[in-house]
Length: 354
Image (tube, rainbow, N blue to C red; front, side, top):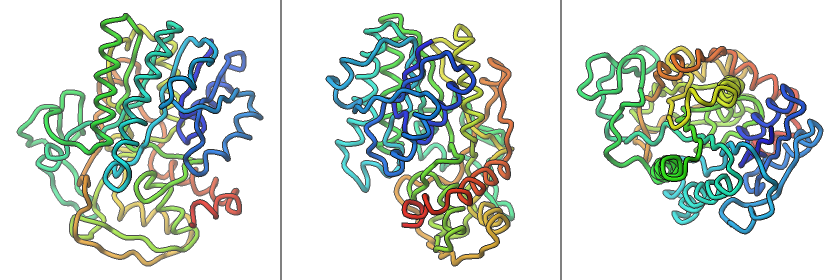
């Protein structure tokens, strides 16, 4: 099998590439990336040493893809993955990255008659619908209740039936638009396709920033003894997210690729669920325990644009289809990140402590 992974030098793409090359040494794995995101260049050596091929290209430019070798499968991991994209950065850039880039990848898959596996996001779900959901405030976190007025949400989390009407951020809108294009290519041209709507992903080799990669950011700020802030919702730090270790995502993709007929033409919510997640308060406690450092955390009561109080995934559909559930809990995720950070602190300090 020849697998092409777009965004293949990013955190998720490189992790998946290494997983498949190590498990299936005879597979040809190619990582395609424009190396724009800082820290992605660090993965070049890791990929090369593992026998993963590299193509320096930009999915926004269709001509960059003309000479890419034929493949059996494209895993599209490329995206401007910040929810603030288009708010604090160029709107045209996020649209080109996340929508036009997907269209170019779909054309490439169609050209080579390849299967298409797309990593979407939980951010396709509208902000107002999520914010208006019934919740309760616990000692260290906010969680949803079972008393809801719309379908697709319960104390177990968000299912694929949650309503899509409403605004969601330019990032979420471009990913949802990509999903719609994929469904059109699937039905009009018979392209085999699967969509995974992922919650927050994390693990070693993620270069966490304020707007993306919160788990790594939180641990890094404690590790390098820098400041943080609880922003929004009264500055309490009770916002809750589920966190999925990238290794658990790789296990799911393995099942999907080798049992394609089970999921062809479908989309799945994929995340850590209620059992693998944390509020910022709880992430602070874990970070202090791992690093031995307590840092100053400011409190900002006002919400930022596109903030949400709670998100976690109901994995019922993906579990019933593939027998998959996350194997790692929140402390596993954070411990793996801390050990990686400790081992590579000199290499990572210019990026994570800048």
